[in-house]
Image (cartoon, rainbow, N blue to C red; front, side, top):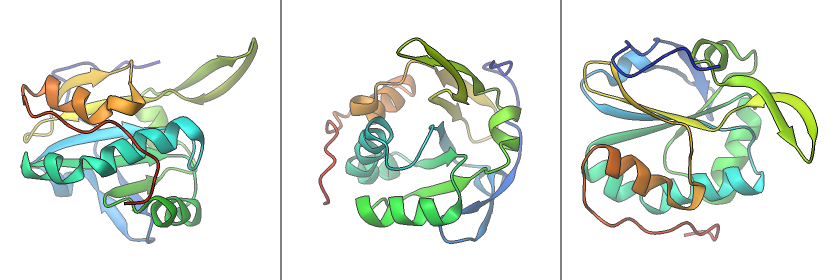
Length: 166
């Protein structure tokens, strides 16, 4: 599983976003980045998490935090997810799971006693120098923005998740 730890340099990558445009993590040096990995577009928990970040996007942006989501879904799936839920942030496609593996979030999971391989919901908080400051492994989807803000010592009170369109 995760072999990266706080203090490590965040692995640089280039992936396509929901619009098919190439995006490099390197582009965000000088900014705080919340890089969140999630299993699948349009599933209930992933939607709640994305909508919580959407509903708190202005607050996160005001605090100079960039939100980047990554899943193994393709760009067409991401575009539909973005459109259906009015997501204002970048979601990146890692179809071949290169970055998912590099960050150590691909592994065995269990649901109702059935074991399978998948993405472990994980968020890496990366500072302005490109160094991992914190790794959130127990993500609370309805309160994810609050988790991010708390780790960075920001006391603002974000909204809880809603899956309704804005």
